[in-house]
Picture (cartoon, one colour):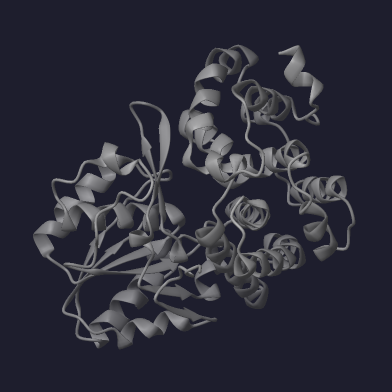
Length: 389
């Protein structure tokens, strides 16, 4: 028997933000990022709907990209003082992920962050508050996942905090909120969706529902991502990408991810490379690496009109190029000297990343280093590169 883990209630479609006016409660804290939600008017709309519902609201603004544990502690203190019965993550995945961890420390002020790094160790939530996720980017699917990625700035490490306790009670998937998203953010987050669909489909957890969602999400990405990058005000295409993001998130919430994310977490934490951009660099070569251990990639290739594993990898590279994304890690200005100096460190961290355990092929440290080096240069991964060291 399997259990499907999903947000408790899901509202999707253009204009679905207005569901906030139907929430029952007394107090809510909205956690958001910089200024984009305020400038777009979305934050004011959310406050107005909550006011209509009779809910008093406070705002925590300023969650940075790749949110830090320090920001989460600061937000938790503010929430503790206000004592809300709803916590709302509004904005990009960083705001929602940070809000999830603020929620944990609101309910458990003395919780041990280091202990929660071990998967499925978050204590039971919903003693004080429930959680609403309202994404403004079509990317991580955090609105329906038990995952929050938090960065320790001092160590230069990203920690995926994994627990089904973190799965939101309500998800609002409103494509209109994404209309103000810049082209480069649209591209990066869309490539993250693509990666979720591919990695969930080939993970070592078998799940028919996750498989169907992965295929459907992948098709939507290939049909809509280039369009929303080029024509950002196409609300139907925006909604399609937003739905794909949710589908990819729901798929990996039930099948989990692989070493694309393990590799990507490290370069994001150490070098600040946008998550979707690094995913799209690693994904084609990880497909090539994994092909010895799974025969599932051709299924995904057929979804986009291709046949083989290599054609799938090349189609991803083509889409990446069409939306003007980088094809090599070195394009982010990282010198070879700096890369070589940190290679052992990031490869070791990738090896023990929680996502590595769900990859269809078990990698060695040397194999991860070989994939890293191929992707640094932007060349095709080859098995013989491992032997060469």
